[in-house]
Length: 107
Image (tube, rainbow, N blue to C red; front, side, top):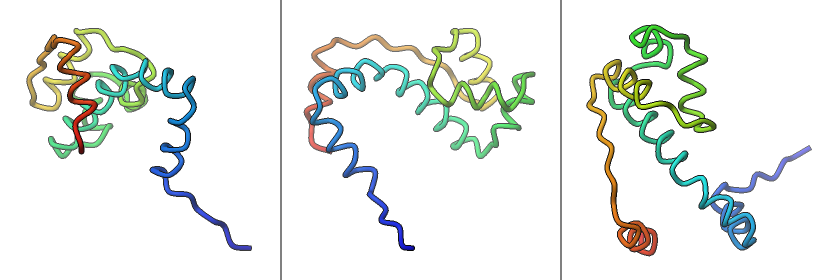
């Protein structure tokens, strides 16, 4: 039996046509941004989740949950993650207009 695989981009484009889905997705932007930043910091440091966990004094499961984006970590936890990955935590506030303009810009 042969399976047909649908590219994620195609599925996402279809789902985003649903206004309720798009609104729910947009409401999670900050969680996705944090998770993406954590994964990038760990990847750039060329570390595994286990290595970051050891450097933070926690478990790999905790790092996986942080990177999963389902919860918003505390600033203290983000600082520990930054130290473990040899990065610096920066929190930036930007005007909503800048965010909206960036979202409309072509990729």
